[in-house]
Image 1 (spheres, rainbow, N blue to C red):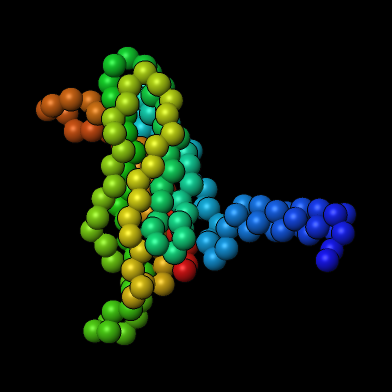
Image 2 (image 1 turned 90 degrees about the vertical axis):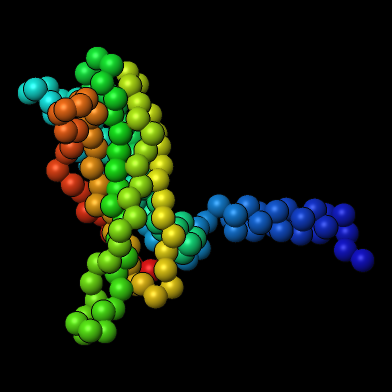
Length: 156
């Protein structure tokens, strides 16, 4: 039977290994940073955003947004990700980006907030891309003003 000291060393080692196992992401892609992006209306910056696009457990692609209402005048701001998967097109004989799902954050006003959108990854695909905008809701009949897009992607 192990001594009390040996049992203590074994239990500490097991606890340390358990902590390392739960902290280290295994089989996940590194997050891809995007931004900063800005959208303007009437010559004034209304929204600024940045964030990350990453693989969550080979199950979902996640867009993290840090959005800031820069003017704080009551107009709402939001983030949008058009979600694409890299799939093989047998008719064309090549891989191409395919997708139609759009993730939109809730609209915020007068604050800076961290928000997320996500979409399912497909076992038939080899990569994911987010086409990301940050936008200001101007009000009817004026179209929303959006930033130029960021295009972060990862392979899986």
